[in-house]
View 1 (cartoon, rainbow, N blue to C red):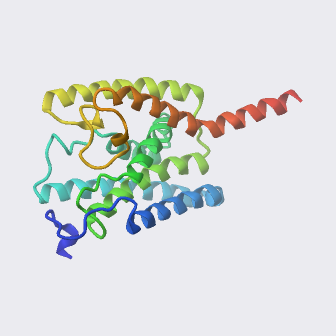
View 2: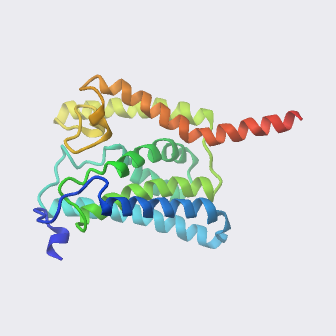
View 3: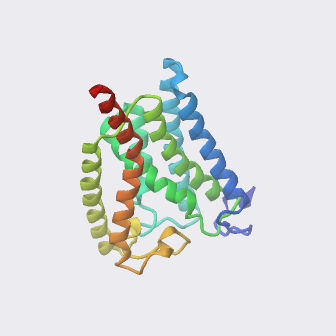
Length: 244
């Protein structure tokens, strides 16, 4: 049990697309498929409980992450401030679930899902493989971000619009600019805009800094477009039906 919380973990390191990773991805996928398939059947009284339960899971998971870093002597302002995209999305998603905030949904759906999916595929778990606390924490955190946005869309009926895309792109870039200033000030690498992360990630296949930054911008736009595509198709079909 001590190894479960250990900072100097002696177990097997995280293996990208190893059996535990693939099983975790499958569980996250099945949960979200179930939300899409059966979520609308959820009785109204249970919807509130589910939203608040998922919000609590997000906050508790993030709190455990910070507490573990503090107790193992790994917490620092250069690496552990909640400034990375998914760390921000933990709090935004929790508030969105508790308040049914549509403005926060726009970011949770268009940016939260995109960022969390990338983190699920290439988790920043370092040497902490299954069954260490960090393995579970990173999967639960990013999986819950995806589920929070999917739930609000599939169950509560929220949906992004073209204006949502504009707002998310403008405000997302303003946030990145502010974080770049923080990185310069304290020597950090939040949002990975100062350099590539040390662990394996999708950035490994991109050019070196700073040339991967505009490519990241294009990839973000592509992901946002793909997430909006089902709604664009639905709107197009609705207009075609209205004309007939």
